[in-house]
Length: 245
Image (cartoon, rainbow, N blue to C red; front, top):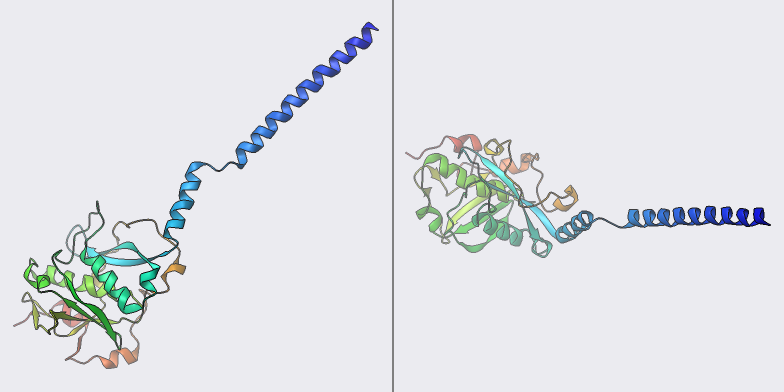
Protein backbone atom coordinates (compact mmCIF):
# COMPACT_ATOMS: atom_id res chain seq x y z
CA UNK A 1 0.00 0.00 0.00
CA UNK A 2 2.82 2.37 0.91
CA UNK A 3 4.52 1.62 -2.43
CA UNK A 4 1.30 2.40 -4.30
CA UNK A 5 0.98 5.77 -2.55
CA UNK A 6 4.58 6.64 -3.46
CA UNK A 7 3.93 5.69 -7.06
CA UNK A 8 0.90 8.00 -7.24
CA UNK A 9 2.98 10.82 -5.74
CA UNK A 10 5.69 10.36 -8.39
CA UNK A 11 3.09 10.45 -11.19
CA UNK A 12 1.60 13.61 -9.67
CA UNK A 13 4.94 15.40 -9.59
CA UNK A 14 5.75 14.42 -13.18
CA UNK A 15 2.30 15.57 -14.40
CA UNK A 16 2.69 18.93 -12.63
CA UNK A 17 6.10 19.52 -14.24
CA UNK A 18 4.80 18.67 -17.72
CA UNK A 19 1.81 21.00 -17.31
CA UNK A 20 4.13 23.86 -16.28
CA UNK A 21 6.34 23.40 -19.33
CA UNK A 22 3.28 23.41 -21.59
CA UNK A 23 2.10 26.72 -20.15
CA UNK A 24 5.53 28.32 -20.72
CA UNK A 25 5.54 27.07 -24.31
CA UNK A 26 2.14 28.66 -24.94
CA UNK A 27 3.37 31.95 -23.45
CA UNK A 28 6.41 31.88 -25.72
CA UNK A 29 4.26 31.24 -28.78
CA UNK A 30 1.98 34.10 -27.76
CA UNK A 31 4.94 36.51 -27.48
CA UNK A 32 6.19 35.59 -30.97
CA UNK A 33 2.83 36.43 -32.54
CA UNK A 34 2.66 39.91 -30.98
CA UNK A 35 4.01 42.57 -33.40
CA UNK A 36 6.66 44.89 -31.99
CA UNK A 37 5.93 48.61 -31.89
CA UNK A 38 8.62 49.53 -34.44
CA UNK A 39 6.97 47.35 -37.06
CA UNK A 40 3.61 48.92 -36.32
CA UNK A 41 5.07 52.42 -36.72
CA UNK A 42 6.68 51.43 -39.99
CA UNK A 43 3.34 50.28 -41.32
CA UNK A 44 1.71 53.52 -40.18
CA UNK A 45 4.33 55.54 -42.05
CA UNK A 46 3.79 53.45 -45.16
CA UNK A 47 0.04 54.00 -44.93
CA UNK A 48 0.64 57.74 -44.63
CA UNK A 49 2.47 57.78 -47.97
CA UNK A 50 -0.04 55.54 -49.73
CA UNK A 51 -2.04 58.48 -51.06
CA UNK A 52 1.00 60.53 -52.12
CA UNK A 53 3.30 60.67 -55.14
CA UNK A 54 7.07 61.36 -54.91
CA UNK A 55 8.50 64.20 -57.00
CA UNK A 56 12.08 65.39 -57.45
CA UNK A 57 12.85 69.03 -56.64
CA UNK A 58 16.24 70.43 -57.66
CA UNK A 59 17.93 72.87 -55.29
CA UNK A 60 21.47 74.29 -55.22
CA UNK A 61 24.01 72.04 -53.52
CA UNK A 62 26.03 73.06 -50.47
CA UNK A 63 29.01 74.14 -52.58
CA UNK A 64 26.84 76.31 -54.82
CA UNK A 65 28.17 74.62 -57.95
CA UNK A 66 25.44 72.19 -59.04
CA UNK A 67 21.87 71.09 -58.49
CA UNK A 68 20.91 68.31 -56.09
CA UNK A 69 17.61 66.46 -55.93
CA UNK A 70 15.33 66.36 -52.92
CA UNK A 71 12.36 63.98 -52.86
CA UNK A 72 9.08 65.48 -51.77
CA UNK A 73 5.60 63.96 -51.61
CA UNK A 74 2.44 65.54 -52.98
CA UNK A 75 -1.14 64.38 -52.64
CA UNK A 76 -2.50 62.08 -55.33
CA UNK A 77 -5.50 64.41 -55.50
CA UNK A 78 -3.12 66.98 -57.02
CA UNK A 79 -1.57 64.56 -59.51
CA UNK A 80 -5.03 63.41 -60.56
CA UNK A 81 -5.97 66.90 -61.74
CA UNK A 82 -3.65 66.79 -64.73
CA UNK A 83 -0.06 67.67 -65.51
CA UNK A 84 -0.65 71.44 -65.57
CA UNK A 85 -2.04 71.43 -62.04
CA UNK A 86 0.70 69.07 -60.89
CA UNK A 87 3.39 71.31 -62.44
CA UNK A 88 1.95 74.33 -60.63
CA UNK A 89 1.97 72.51 -57.28
CA UNK A 90 5.53 71.27 -57.83
CA UNK A 91 6.73 74.76 -58.82
CA UNK A 92 5.29 76.24 -55.62
CA UNK A 93 7.00 73.51 -53.60
CA UNK A 94 10.30 74.40 -55.26
CA UNK A 95 9.87 78.08 -54.41
CA UNK A 96 9.15 77.18 -50.77
CA UNK A 97 12.76 75.99 -50.50
CA UNK A 98 14.57 72.87 -49.25
CA UNK A 99 13.34 70.79 -46.32
CA UNK A 100 14.12 72.04 -42.82
CA UNK A 101 17.59 70.94 -41.75
CA UNK A 102 18.74 70.30 -45.32
CA UNK A 103 22.19 71.45 -46.43
CA UNK A 104 20.79 72.40 -49.82
CA UNK A 105 20.20 76.05 -50.75
CA UNK A 106 17.07 77.70 -52.12
CA UNK A 107 17.26 78.22 -55.87
CA UNK A 108 14.44 80.75 -56.25
CA UNK A 109 13.91 83.91 -54.15
CA UNK A 110 11.29 83.11 -51.50
CA UNK A 111 9.35 86.28 -52.40
CA UNK A 112 8.65 84.90 -55.88
CA UNK A 113 4.98 84.23 -56.67
CA UNK A 114 3.44 82.01 -59.32
CA UNK A 115 1.21 84.61 -60.99
CA UNK A 116 -0.56 82.18 -63.33
CA UNK A 117 -0.90 78.40 -63.29
CA UNK A 118 1.60 76.54 -65.46
CA UNK A 119 0.39 75.90 -69.01
CA UNK A 120 1.65 73.04 -71.18
CA UNK A 121 1.51 73.01 -74.98
CA UNK A 122 3.48 70.78 -77.37
CA UNK A 123 5.79 69.75 -74.53
CA UNK A 124 6.61 73.34 -73.51
CA UNK A 125 5.60 74.41 -70.00
CA UNK A 126 5.02 78.16 -69.67
CA UNK A 127 5.96 79.43 -66.20
CA UNK A 128 4.65 82.85 -65.19
CA UNK A 129 6.45 84.36 -62.18
CA UNK A 130 6.31 87.67 -60.36
CA UNK A 131 9.04 90.27 -60.93
CA UNK A 132 10.53 89.25 -57.56
CA UNK A 133 12.14 86.33 -59.38
CA UNK A 134 14.46 88.87 -61.01
CA UNK A 135 14.51 91.78 -58.56
CA UNK A 136 15.19 89.68 -55.43
CA UNK A 137 17.76 87.44 -57.12
CA UNK A 138 21.40 87.99 -56.02
CA UNK A 139 22.67 87.73 -59.59
CA UNK A 140 25.90 86.27 -60.88
CA UNK A 141 26.22 84.01 -63.91
CA UNK A 142 26.42 80.73 -61.96
CA UNK A 143 23.56 81.63 -59.63
CA UNK A 144 21.40 82.63 -62.57
CA UNK A 145 22.17 79.40 -64.39
CA UNK A 146 21.33 77.23 -61.37
CA UNK A 147 18.13 79.15 -60.64
CA UNK A 148 16.82 78.76 -64.17
CA UNK A 149 17.75 75.11 -64.45
CA UNK A 150 16.41 74.26 -60.99
CA UNK A 151 12.98 75.12 -62.40
CA UNK A 152 13.61 73.51 -65.78
CA UNK A 153 15.00 70.24 -64.43
CA UNK A 154 12.26 70.01 -61.80
CA UNK A 155 9.39 70.53 -64.23
CA UNK A 156 10.83 68.26 -66.92
CA UNK A 157 10.56 65.42 -64.40
CA UNK A 158 6.83 65.60 -65.13
CA UNK A 159 5.51 63.52 -67.98
CA UNK A 160 5.00 65.36 -71.31
CA UNK A 161 7.15 68.39 -70.33
CA UNK A 162 10.33 68.66 -72.41
CA UNK A 163 11.19 72.36 -72.02
CA UNK A 164 10.23 75.46 -70.04
CA UNK A 165 9.35 78.97 -71.23
CA UNK A 166 9.50 81.86 -68.74
CA UNK A 167 7.17 84.84 -68.37
CA UNK A 168 7.42 87.67 -65.85
CA UNK A 169 4.06 89.10 -64.77
CA UNK A 170 2.52 87.66 -67.92
CA UNK A 171 5.03 89.23 -70.30
CA UNK A 172 7.99 87.95 -72.28
CA UNK A 173 11.18 89.36 -70.74
CA UNK A 174 14.42 89.39 -72.73
CA UNK A 175 17.01 88.75 -70.04
CA UNK A 176 17.51 87.48 -66.51
CA UNK A 177 19.90 89.67 -64.45
CA UNK A 178 22.19 90.20 -67.46
CA UNK A 179 23.72 86.78 -68.11
CA UNK A 180 20.92 84.65 -69.56
CA UNK A 181 18.10 85.23 -71.99
CA UNK A 182 14.66 84.17 -70.80
CA UNK A 183 12.70 84.95 -73.94
CA UNK A 184 13.43 81.43 -75.23
CA UNK A 185 12.51 77.95 -73.98
CA UNK A 186 15.01 75.97 -71.92
CA UNK A 187 15.43 72.20 -72.24
CA UNK A 188 16.64 69.86 -69.50
CA UNK A 189 20.35 69.83 -68.61
CA UNK A 190 21.45 66.76 -66.63
CA UNK A 191 25.09 67.91 -66.57
CA UNK A 192 24.18 70.38 -63.84
CA UNK A 193 22.84 67.65 -61.54
CA UNK A 194 25.19 66.49 -58.80
CA UNK A 195 25.94 62.79 -58.39
CA UNK A 196 25.35 63.28 -54.68
CA UNK A 197 21.62 64.01 -54.26
CA UNK A 198 20.28 66.04 -51.39
CA UNK A 199 18.54 64.63 -48.34
CA UNK A 200 15.05 63.32 -49.02
CA UNK A 201 12.12 64.97 -47.29
CA UNK A 202 11.01 61.49 -46.19
CA UNK A 203 11.52 57.81 -47.00
CA UNK A 204 11.68 56.52 -50.56
CA UNK A 205 8.88 54.52 -52.15
CA UNK A 206 8.74 52.08 -55.03
CA UNK A 207 8.95 53.18 -58.64
CA UNK A 208 5.33 52.20 -59.12
CA UNK A 209 4.38 55.57 -57.59
CA UNK A 210 6.22 57.49 -60.29
CA UNK A 211 3.82 57.00 -63.20
CA UNK A 212 3.30 60.77 -63.52
CA UNK A 213 7.02 61.63 -63.54
CA UNK A 214 9.34 61.59 -66.50
CA UNK A 215 12.17 59.06 -66.85
CA UNK A 216 15.42 60.93 -66.12
CA UNK A 217 17.33 58.87 -68.68
CA UNK A 218 14.87 59.57 -71.50
CA UNK A 219 16.30 61.59 -74.36
CA UNK A 220 14.29 64.02 -76.52
CA UNK A 221 12.92 62.40 -79.65
CA UNK A 222 13.94 63.50 -83.12
CA UNK A 223 10.49 65.03 -83.51
CA UNK A 224 11.06 67.12 -80.38
CA UNK A 225 14.42 68.31 -81.66
CA UNK A 226 13.00 69.45 -85.01
CA UNK A 227 10.50 71.68 -83.19
CA UNK A 228 13.29 73.65 -81.56
CA UNK A 229 14.51 76.66 -83.55
CA UNK A 230 17.02 79.31 -82.64
CA UNK A 231 14.22 81.73 -81.83
CA UNK A 232 12.31 79.29 -79.62
CA UNK A 233 14.66 76.85 -77.90
CA UNK A 234 18.35 77.05 -77.15
CA UNK A 235 20.48 73.92 -76.78
CA UNK A 236 22.15 73.23 -73.44
CA UNK A 237 25.61 73.80 -74.94
CA UNK A 238 24.59 77.25 -76.16
CA UNK A 239 23.03 78.26 -72.86
CA UNK A 240 25.73 77.06 -70.48
CA UNK A 241 28.30 79.54 -71.80
CA UNK A 242 26.03 82.25 -73.18
CA UNK A 243 26.55 85.82 -71.92
CA UNK A 244 24.57 88.68 -73.36
CA UNK A 245 26.61 91.26 -75.20
